Length: 512
Image (cartoon, rainbow, N blue to C red; front, side, top):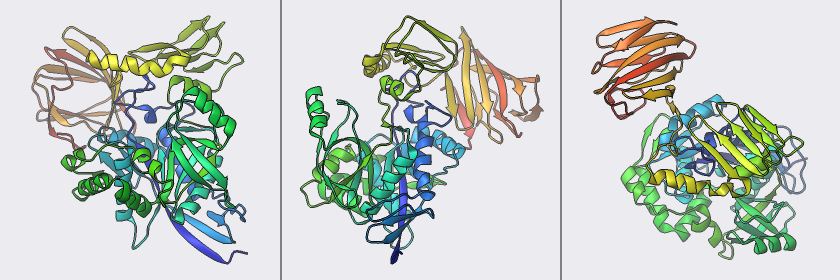
């Protein structure tokens, strides 16, 4: 029988600031990897949130001497029950993705406690610092929460094993250690940094001896032969105070400037906005470089819990093929795909039928406006194509043809000289801004739902098969007052049809 019971306050932190280049053309800067659904019905962000939320419901053995406890507690060593109080997640992400994050998490019933919006990218060390400061600010009394920090864009095939490893790490981190999850390697891989770990203690937690940079193939092979080396997956568990003290010791410049940006923050419902000018002066550095690699031998305790949960960082299309279900010939498919005489090939079809014949070790990714065909072993080099698109000032690396907005989405289905056709969806209860265009007129045809249309001084309701005309220069707004999504076909005509030809007078989403 347990003699004592401890309550640990756990604050999940999801790092969702990825830029979205390695899985192009499915991933774009405006719709990066963490928002993609690559298997099942949930995006990578939604899966990350659901794995963290599972800590509330299942708390497997986390230390030696204990057994599984089915009441939301963790049996620690020395006959101690440790109960976990798990908060809603703090999410750190790009300001431009704020409504995507909220929509996806609400859809997954994982509403965040706060969404910290980085005004510009400053790598993961400042991002984690913002989350730690927010966690401390939101905590009650003198609570020092245990942060469980995970990227938003990884894949795990065994969520229960992941939860068990996290629970063990939480107990160790509560004692003041920095704990990382070390991925048990199944092959020599040059794409990951490695962790060299010592022998495990009675609680199954290893002391970290050192972090090592991405090795060459011969070194990675030697690591596996020697044993005791694990992949660094960028998953950390530590108290908020532990992180802030370690950062102050190793990178006081990051600590102080991030504090200034946080102190001057503004808030709007769940959104937390660090001061832009102050945050622009924060040095850019990663969690690993700023703190983790400096800890071994420094007197700051740093430990590792092994993780065998089918983890994959999905760093390239080859990695997506590795975790995807395959047919008898090693082919993996998503969407409408036909294979003939092909082996070990990945085809991801988004908008049409894709057929392949006689391919081996190839990746084919089809979207509405771009197609990638690559040797599977060279799929990491997609960044070369993305760089070329940037140099040519093309848009295919930034947005899809279908563009998500806080009120819904639009899909540019056709265009020509002086005209453009869009399919527009507006969520129930949502509305576009009250706006005006200098260079174009618009025709709207309702194909589903009910539209409330403001045009000048008029306000009318339109239902299926009804239409209206918005003259050039007229103030107008489209809203959905109904209970089902509204879909319209919009035909624009005029001398200039760019998205920047818009003057907003009122907006529900804080856009100028």
